[in-house]
Image (cartoon, rainbow, N blue to C red):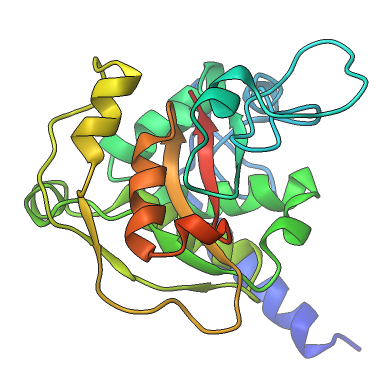
Length: 247
């Protein structure tokens, strides 16, 4: 006799199969049609081109180290200019399939990628311990950019984490009070100046939970540091961070 959970799972798969007749899934990277039971939006071949970030990595910003190390430490950047967050971890490098996923997330109404990101987090198998029962705080967009884009990609990443690990919760604790120019072509120093004072805390994170600030990409860490500082605990080093990609 089928359990309720098995029955619901079978019904969900059947409904998904019906939908795929009308809206076929295609790989976000290569575009081939997907007919696997995994769900999601990457094919097996393109997933093999994801450059996962695994140990060894910088204990602060999570940048990967290459080669054999006697012990893990901080990278030269974090040693010279320590970010405000306690630690940051990223799922993969911003290249190949990883870069394509981030691009689709930001510029192709990426809500549909929420399930794919959740699958990748679960399949990697190491992330449940990192998130635990964390309070996830997405880095906000300025209201004008949010209105123009229609969504916040960091909030989609946070929603994917919660879908993968339901013990977490999402809290919109920050607003962006300054509309900052794009940081794509700015130096590290200019990025820090650009994001200084850009965020304001509007509510307290959930009491008793570890705080993890969430964004799509970490490049210099300037945006995450500004967000953590606005949350008001950067000096104590209690706030962690997560980004989908490390650039």
